[in-house]
Image (cartoon, rainbow, N blue to C red; front, side, top):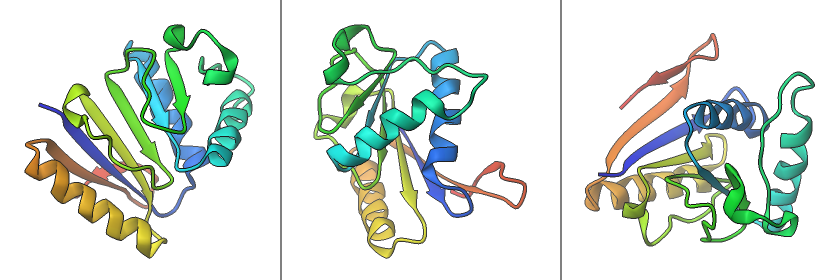
Length: 150
């Protein structure tokens, strides 16, 4: 059964949240795909993941980098998953993949200040529930800790 986690961004931007979640995924030995809503956003995230922390290294790549199958974190602008990922992050309103059941975990990160993104997240929640996924909803508290709300 696919586990689907919805992360509601409210107090922190994606650029702060995504690297932390990706680092935890890599530490657990998971292979990950991050799908962004647009190629431009993907390029910005790629650049950010190289520079987000001087003391950290987050191995990742895109199709342009080559060796896609070897990347622990692969950044995609579409449905591809050439690295055999079992975890898929969807950011910046990237659509749900048709084959959600192929992933052990889907992580949908949406901007809580964007009404369209909230509506799309609700629709994705219902779709995943209807497909039998185990869905949870997470929001940060005042101390920037993720708290399960549903």
